Length: 575
Ligand SMILES: [Zn+2]
Image 1 (cartoon, rainbow, N blue to C red):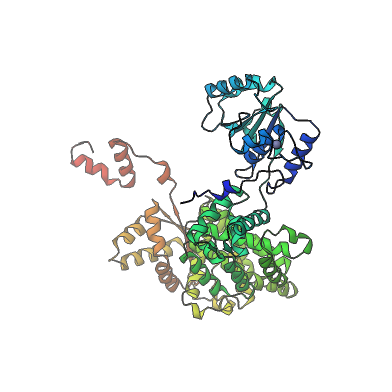
Image 2: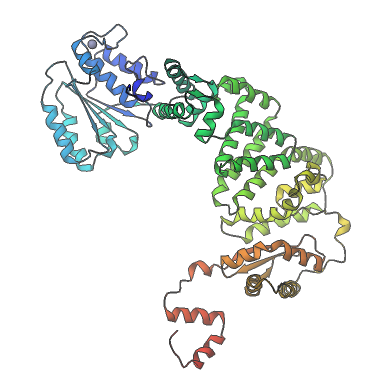
């Protein structure tokens, strides 16, 4: 059986010319050699897998070559070149500082430096991951770096330039390697695929390149794996399945749904994505990226910023041409806001659903705004909008904000959406008033002036407490909820909103889970259709730590003064 060599090694560039995507480096290096201005030490910085070590080896070989070609490449024929190619050259030393970072390791290297080359002109020392050297090792190395023998050249490589101390930096000629462009990686993969007689789709190679995030080595190892998985048939579908990449097709479809205001299809599509095992963060990041790509397509000048294959480029351009810039901006606004807040949200799925709903209604919202600007102001809207800050200020912790908007939204959206066939954009965005309500996260209930009638009870603490208890009594079968309700503290925020504070998050969740039923009951009894409540947990839950029996007793006493009597009854025994 023939030996299998991974592509990253098999197709490792051996000349400056074949290094992928770093022409700014290779050109400079060639000039340096040509003009005989070799520095004593080089520092190669840049992300992993972009060709730092490869370039270091090519440089080492070239400066030792006895017959450099006209294009400043090693001749591959002289004695030195041959020994380099057979890996028998005594003039190159590689040290991986990640695993050899002690003073002793460096001392051994320094010893080596003293011995001049037996053949060839230069001894080249490549120290990889040089930022991993211990401080002592750095110091031991510094002296050699300050006054090296003329035949010694150092090439230091690092992924973390900021960790290199200034004394080293100042002694090196610095080269910054770039992430390799997706297009360049894809082209290289194409070259390898052709050499290996592998069938491929251009899209597939692009996806690999994209996933490699600028690292050629990573791209090549992914390529090798995929060739194995797919028995040498790299199709786009194969690749996205194996690489866990979300098909851009989803995003194209989503934006089409947004544009037509189709909320239900957007949500169903998201469900499909979740079913495939993608998480929300991944999804929302990809969505922002997609919208950014569309924006880039709007102007032919910025089209070059689009890092996708030509085939997809035309699809982006096509979709972009059907969108207006301010609409895309609105989408991007929403997407980035939700992307940013995603981690803090409690109900992540709902959170994304709200985001999608907002996007799907953005197109109508914009139309509404333009028409409203012409129409006269709507008096009924004012109180709702003013109410918003009061709701916001109540829940102080930042984490709770998404949850708050999410819970509010449950009320609005959930009932409309559960039967998908019933949902049409009309249901949610029929009148001017309700459009505003959606974007402000205020309950969407038919809000004509006639309905704010006399049969609404005034919302006082007594009324709420009374109904709260009545509801609690009516649910004898649910002991947990009953207990949670009996322990909760109620405060009135305004004539439609009150806040329920629980002692711990378990009780809060219990109440939240039954929120709909409680609200239904209370709305019916009060006649206040917009009645709503917020939930929160007493801060004490997090602060109060009960360690010993005395603490426990104090804590229980605070909760219930009868504990004192109980203790007396039991004659002061220790709890
Ligand atoms: Zn040579």
